[in-house]
Length: 316
Image (cartoon, rainbow, N blue to C red; front, top):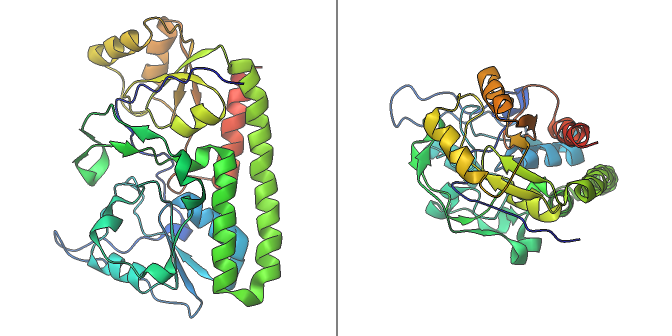
């Protein structure tokens, strides 16, 4: 089943779930501008460093306490545009395994030297099908400053079939790192892939109800979700915590020209005032959190299950 997938790529912006967690203790804040962060003490277990929260979840879910998984990006930054300091880079360089998202996710990685034998690009297996983004603008959010998202769309894991492939790449890397735990890792991977495949089945069933339903997204981060599940989607450039001003509402009206959407998909829970403004023009709100950083509560799987349930509720 194919439908036109409208990707009005004004920008490819921050991936949601920027929250704290005991598992995500980033290096301590520098005491002065440019100061390096302090490395976390090692546990004696193999050190696995990851580029984003989905990979942290996959690695911890598969290996348990066999390895120490470290995700260093702070809670208030988009991991895709985070700039690690010297100590964080040293931690990556000294790791036993480095799990990268690929698809141009970690912009900093092109500027440093990492040990190639320890780096695993978890999306390499489907690189031939990456989506290229050409229509973008420069913008800023959080403490990271201005940047552009031209190039490759990188929220690969919200296509749940691709997420399964990334989980399998993590499995293979962990088995190589900790062969004595092979049986446990493979058993855990089988359970994880089954859960991701179940989400894929639910979204595929939902896509049959959405194939002719125009939708609008608060941000153009849903490229792979839209392609996999045939969503007829256009995007604007809104932040969940920011109430749209007159210009933002005009941009939305332009996006709706010839595309009579009645639902907006948000990365995070939108401000009450934003929901009310949309209600006035006949648009309802639903959240699909990409979960690139650690969530407030629950974990990657519970967030994704909540995302799918929210869409199923919106389109029964």
